[in-house]
Length: 93
Image 1: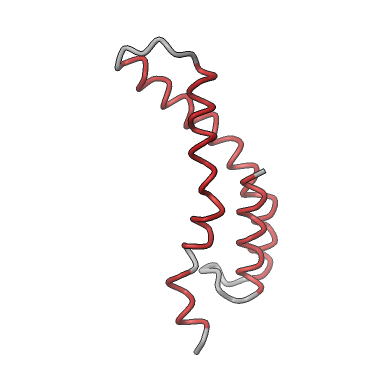
Image 2: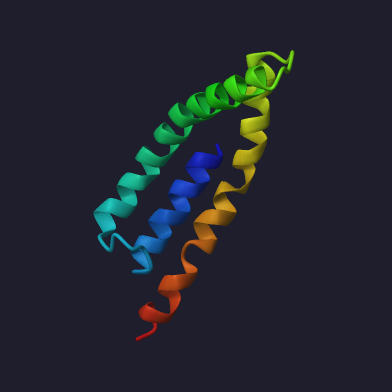
């Protein structure tokens, strides 16, 4: 869900010409691409987190690692908005 929100924010940014990619087609493609990559890499990130925990001696399971990485993803819409700040000045010209 958060990946969909981030993709939609990037699509809106491309319509306002604030996206570094610049093309509206790339912005609309982000509505579909960002959620898919978010889902894939959430499992990969949880696996990396799980391996680090096991090397540190934790007894927690993979589900706990996935939940922690999912909670960290809650800031992705905020980072999508903050990523637009460098382009705000260039768009006003």
